[in-house]
Image (cartoon, rainbow, N blue to C red; front, side):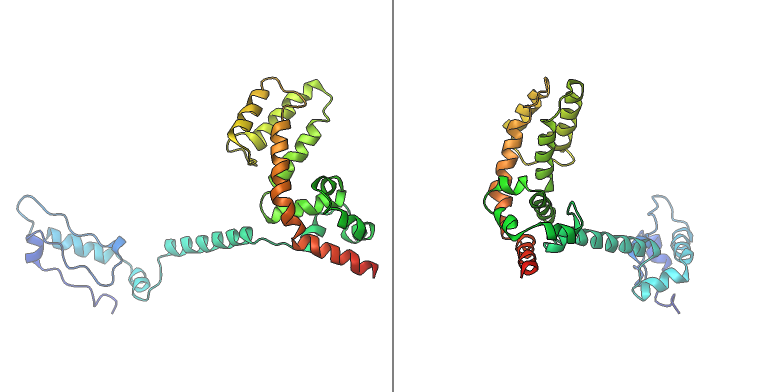
Length: 251
């Protein structure tokens, strides 16, 4: 029987204020020693209190512990943890392939490849600005940055380029504030990696927004991508696979 291993509680040990022997089959969360009384002990109080706690345990709870299974709440928590680990594993898996590039091309993949020549793709290695100025080059670089979880740098640079085209004075302040809150401010949703001095200078520029208020921050991010991300992009599978695809199409 499941209750056969539960030790018996002696009256002498209960009267002496000594906690009863710990049951072998009870989890720690379900075992509670009886309170120690300061006055004359009740003939049966402590003993009955402990035995009542044991009697309240369902046979299923004792069985779960005996065979090594978890209580329902713990099993639910473990399932949730496994699900979270799976989701985090998917997020941390960095895919770096030609398919990632074709998935976000401005045009359909096949049509884009027909329009993209090997000469054009090769020219992306000439300079970072040549890459950014090409529609498919920009799309390929964005796909690469997504594999490194650093696409906020390119998104900020593009937002600044769009901001500098603003002609409405009424929209200038609101657009500047949105860019600052999204990319520049401390703990912004897509905070870019800039130094403290640049961030504070940009913050002061927000007092009187102008078309040049993000110039220094944009320059810092451009330099970071050019020196850090761009060389890795040229060595990535996204770029090398793309070159191979264009060459095979011509052959």
